[in-house]
Length: 304
Image (cartoon, rainbow, N blue to C red; front, side, top):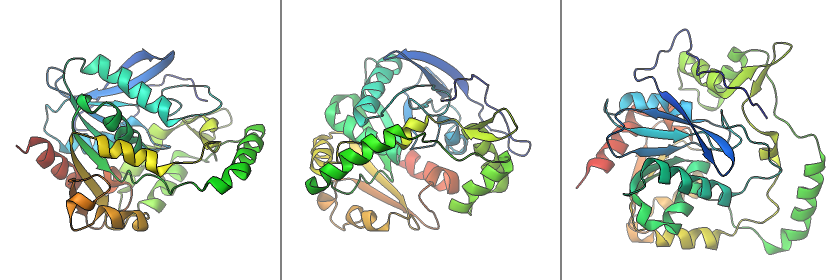
């Protein structure tokens, strides 16, 4: 994994409206990197990125929030500038790390939480495990995973063992522009300058001039334990915070979106949750529609 500490770069064509501050904390023996924006005297909005992403990519969302909104965004272990060498990564690791992070940033009162994709799934587990620690929760495309079939356990254990023996790694790129083009392939509505900015946060240049992602290759090893959706749902049911579900109408997770859009809020996977569907937007909400996402977040967090 990458272990450098290069400061956040700025694309030639994109300048953050609200540049972040960088902090580091020892969390469970890992040197955690955290970005902060806004007024630290205010209660924090903690934002959690998805798989393969990093805290810095929330810059576009932060720029659309109120100037003094205090935003705290960690790089999950093994992503971004939180260097970690591990053989496996577990959701229990993420929620334990989040618990320690909240003890640093808001030890005495519940926080507002926003998670995207994997970050939203981890946040949802946490919000049900420690319901008293969360005031309001924005779940952006954290649909959970398909339920595991117990009959698949033998083949899944074998796949896990064999993949651990492989030299798994991520693709490298010829330039930051090549990586930016890959980002825009998934999110074509994203402006070129912003895709280049994200590329510079996601990766670094290595010997020979190739561009390599800030991500521990161990993240690519499959989980040996099958996903048990009923266990995740039990956590969702235990959440006491107000919940807002946010999705893009062009998300590739269309099948999962159907349950979220049940006309009766009581029948949604997060009972009673509010719902915002952002038109013309795919899975990467904070890349493609940060203005609309910020509007939804602001309205939800300031509502009576």
